Image 1 (cartoon, one colour):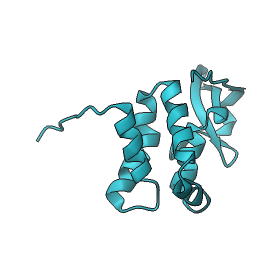
Image 2 (cartoon, helix red, strand yellow):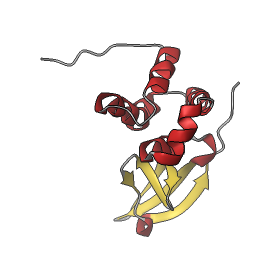
Image 3 (cartoon, one colour):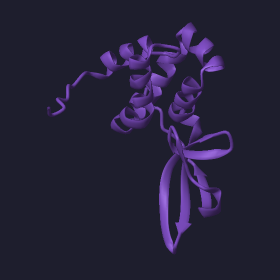
Image 4 (cartoon, helix red, strand yellow):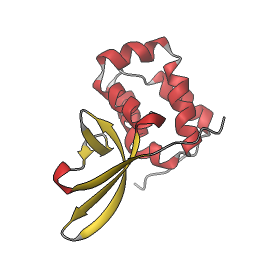
Length: 131
């Protein structure tokens, strides 16, 4: 059976994210992880900042941030002050990667980081706030 995609607006996505703040059952956790690895790429910078600020106003988020690794990963990924361009060189090929910092590593996804031996330089991205 072919996967059918559905479109929801940003505010519906935000309400859903709020309902899925860890710890939650596995189905909600999967959505939460997809916020970081999939939906982050589909959002504008402004959407990312709005969602980040929105969830921080929820008292459950603050509690989860102290106790749940998945919330800590989400927080690091969406924090507008924790965004970097990491320049690498591997086998003579130079590339630039959008990354977030966590535990002294630069990540491009929840469980994918850039090996420091290939990092040439790192630039802190300044995210313009539109609101």
